[in-house]
Image (cartoon, rainbow, N blue to C red; front, top):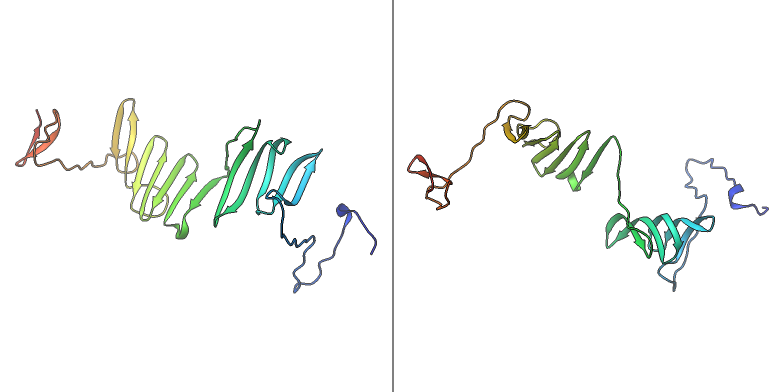
Amino acid sequence: MSTVNIYEMAQTWNSAGTTFTAIGMDVTDTASAAGSKLLSLLLGGDPIFDVTKERAALLYNSYTDASNYERGFMRWDSNVLEVGTEAAGTGTLRDIRISGDDLYFAARDNFSFMYFQGSSIWMRLDDFAMALGNQHILWSGASATGSGDVGLLRDSANTLKVTDGSTGTGELIFIVPTTDPGIPGALWNNGGTLAISA
């Protein structure tokens, strides 16, 4: 077989029972620096994409040298998958933006999740769900996203309204103490009569 450049290599995959590998390398690491790389792609001498021996995929935003850069990463650390940004020297630590039509972040078995849908945000802890959106906070005992059955709404300037989960009026139930709290203006239950603490 004649020698060809890596960008000119060709291979035919023609067996459904065969697991093919186009490019493969098995490194035996008995001693190497922590920053050793299994793959390093550069453009004009500047790193663009690295895969280090720590199984971190690094995408550079800017690079001056090994001590001055901005980059993103996805890596495993103590059995936790991490996604983030990092910087060194003259580099600036950058923000992260995740975008899409609807976004859904869930813990194991979906017992807890955060769901971004349009201009609303749904959050659930076990069997309790809460949504934020359009100046309306909704609560529901259901696990699915959608409309809540009770809510708080900024009805107008300086006005907070308790709702039935949409535009109707809901109920606000609160329990007052049965003894005088000793706080001027506080409500309390004085033998079945609503009283105001002096």
